[in-house]
Image (tube, helix red, strand yellow):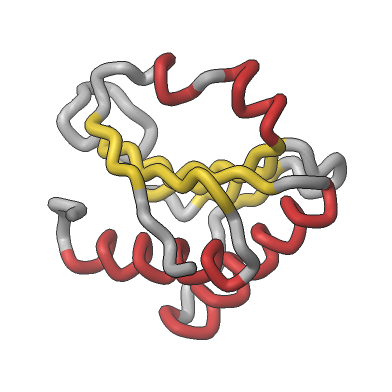
Length: 123
């Protein structure tokens, strides 16, 4: 699935688990590692259905990664308005959107050269 070093894969796996725990939807991994001059190697994108859901996803990701890998985010943005929360783990950046905001910014098309992996979550 994700062709990277084991540290990135473990981090991405734990991020996905955190999203899955609180029923985040439309999860994609974007592999930016083959694109020059990018700020990170991977984006993980998902959608929440409300402000509360976006906040719950962000908290679940942060807590799960901290508990399992003992890693804290370098920075976290957008938690105040809960429409687009960004969690920066340096090589992996998590974007948690409300649907309208995700459609407006259309990051998947903005980074059109990236390989996009659709993640099938457990039901």
